[in-house]
Amino acid sequence: MSNTDNRCRLVLIVPDIADVGSPAQILSGALRGGDVASVIVPQYGLDDQTFQKHAEALVPLIQDAGAAALVAGDTRVAGRVKADGLHVTGNAA
Image (cartoon, rainbow, N blue to C red; front, side, top):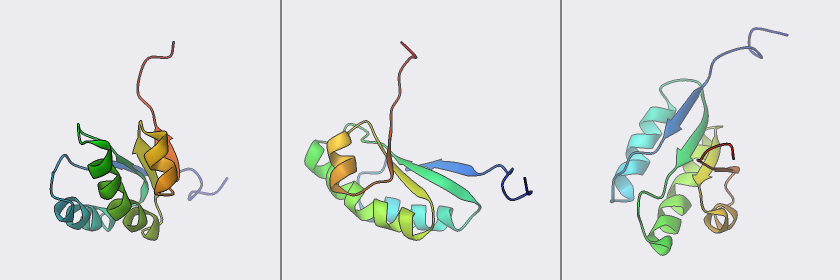
């Protein structure tokens, strides 16, 4: 196994900001800040339509940076925006 295969990578979480443009700008800078493996896009109480708009703006930005885009908890939005995966929280049971 090479050193590049066995390295720590970053997981980012998009901040809770209502304006779609602000998270995209902040996230763009954060993606340039290190070796980012994935980014979690949480819903933060947004209605489904607004959440999908946020995800539509952020998922391509994340993927273009070479990271996996993970939508938190909503399989429909994850599929519609072509996210790389789904982030699920909860206990093991």
